[in-house]
Length: 437
Image 1 (cartoon, helix red, strand yellow):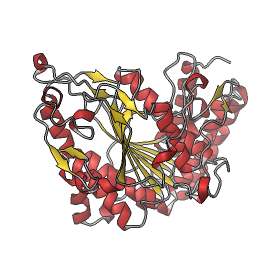
Image 2 (image 1 turned 45 degrees about the horizontal axis):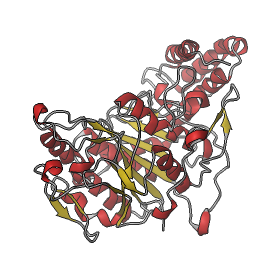
Image 3 (image 1 turned 180 degrees about the horizontal axis):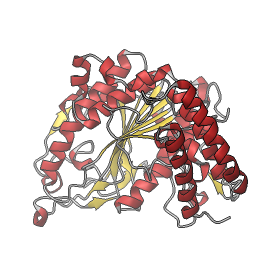
């Protein structure tokens, strides 16, 4: 069975247009997961309890490892003007642009041996999110979709997978179907769009329109009895559950104190991380928050400084807030990017840095991960991972491991093609178990 993206768009448009016409709402943001498998055990190796939720912080654009978490102090040709700040980890320094984060590094594991072979943004982001490279015949599920499918749903009304300021293409569920795609939120201050019934419509009128829409869709479902259409059939039930759920309060940032909102930062990323914490409290499984702008081909040092202003206080506040609320042990916080930046400072580009997949840095905290731990190493120039290299496949497998998911278990698409969270057979990833307590 060959995947036909045009058919997918046609069916999607048909259902969404009917939903809007007959229910008075737009249901696209409510295409979250429904019933997940019972594949997750109550405990994993060594009696460790699996994490309940993941907050995935996507540093889109290629965050420079050399100017953030893998400094090459003393190597002026590589480090440029960057200075280091001491952290609670003995002998480990972070960038001068991360003063708040420096103080909480004892909660993190830093992986300074990430590496990849892909140095183009779109393809690299696809790999980070899906553990596969793009193919013309199939759309692969994102890691969040895998989590939606393979872990029991904790909140029966809210979508188990939510993406804040992220890309629809990277947060889709591909062959798994729309019910495992992310609910997309553009502005965290506005919450989940189109979840309120029109004031001009009564509950009785809404129910009548719901039944009418379902009746009109029946013929379409019978004629196109595919897995994709079956997946979309659940959209009406999902939407109704969300609209009537008291848990919608989780999206109301106005319930937070002004002090808390300011501590997270007033920009979209900061408020997105605050919303992520609230969604963890509401038992949403997987929340992604994206901070773009890391593509520092030109004026790298000015660019990194500006980006770190957005990241630093927010990241430190998120970790501290989760910890104070007793949520950090059960929440895996991940900071990832598609690749690093080149060791050579490109003076011809106003001291910019180019794309560099040979070595870069990721962070993990909570969810059973060790604190104050540096794993792996790049060479003296930050060009290559030379100790304990970690691939994207390994890293995504590690996320699965934290949640109690079997990274290597084979699952089949509707066309019977085999897939796994760890990626393709020839480059199957393995969890980095050494970073767990």
